[in-house]
View 1 (cartoon, rainbow, N blue to C red):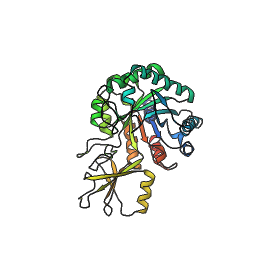
View 2: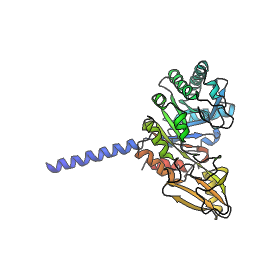
View 3: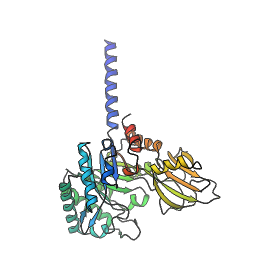
View 4: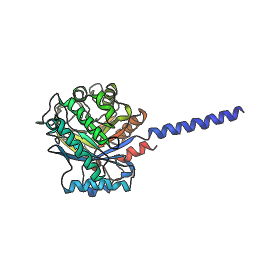
Length: 363
């Protein structure tokens, strides 16, 4: 009898363990996409839960997808549901430099209502599943020259409330959130917005960016002695502000950032430098194959890679397969809502970083 009980307990434990693992692997995998409709067919769409069209913009006070090529891309995305019936197609508003009139338009109650109706009309017309607000940024400085004011914080809340009332529960609402301190503190009324949205897409990349004058990791998993901003920092800040773990989507980068540093620098990381350019993961890996002067480093504290070329005085910060796998595991182990990345067309159609995410999910 005792053996039967022990055996039954083992079976029950295995069943529970399997169920927990299955629950962990159900994280969302969200891809932003800014490429052409033709290239979409090349990618393993079956490995995504969400595909975000990047970007639609404001035309007056309405959401506008854009020209015929943009519409063709949205139609292609929706058509890919034949390959992946569970795929959600989301229209994103704005992007870096793409929301010059957001502060003005969303300060008006009437304009917010018109905008929300236009969003619903596009959802119905194209068969899309929701909207992602990529307003960079409400209430704090973003793209140079774009208007922002303290009242944006409350107006963003009003915008989300109007969207939820208009769209109901059928359509998803998410927004792209800056991963830096000032955004966390001043841009969003977190306790009011969190109950209304499906996800917060945490932009835990570009944490050192084109305006930074010191090198660093642009998308590290963990903070270091020399750098506060990281994926983990952003997650902890959102949780502290009342955002449920299941609504937090961490960000990964399918590209790297290049800096030129001083020739006499003792090391390449955390040194004065000048930002040069961004390159896709494909281009970075080709560079490693063709330029043997690039040295690979792994920062165990940050859980992030970087490159240094002492001949050309170049520093590169990026995500690779190792860091992407660790981010995916982080989301699963901490029961975070999922992982998103910018952006799909920068990846290899086969054997790329999306495949790394999928592999980590399904282990």
